[in-house]
Image (cartoon, rainbow, N blue to C red):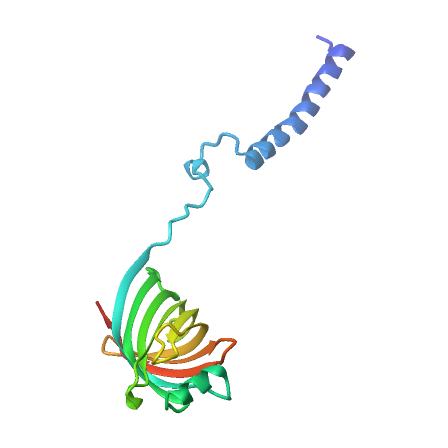
Length: 203
């Protein structure tokens, strides 16, 4: 039997369509997630994000140190009127709340430090600081926060607010933290520089 020309044309067209459409369909399935018999390809490619877990701990311990009031500021004048020198001792207690990622990394800390200054002069000058900062795994730490201090003995209502900026390093020995901090307090009536030592035990 002889094949007619229209039959040949139809055969050629069918072959061309098969050669072009089949590869295109396969490519589209691979690009756009078409059905596949491979079970590995049916898995959801979206990565699973696990939430970060945190540990909350509290530490506390004593603090002591020295504060220096430089220059001829209003605070320095008030201290002189009260019979005190620019150098004042500091004694108090330190309360700290830590938030640490379970996988390790920097600690986020909130510290409350009440102190009493001037006991060597027979005076009682209380202060309290609320500092918020970060402590790195290396032991270095940085914090900033408000400070409230009584600068007069006769007039206990003579309060001074300051902004405290502190940097320090925590030595660790047998589960005990031994921090050393250098703090700078700024106020229009005078600045203060303090160095504070102590130790902290987990509560």
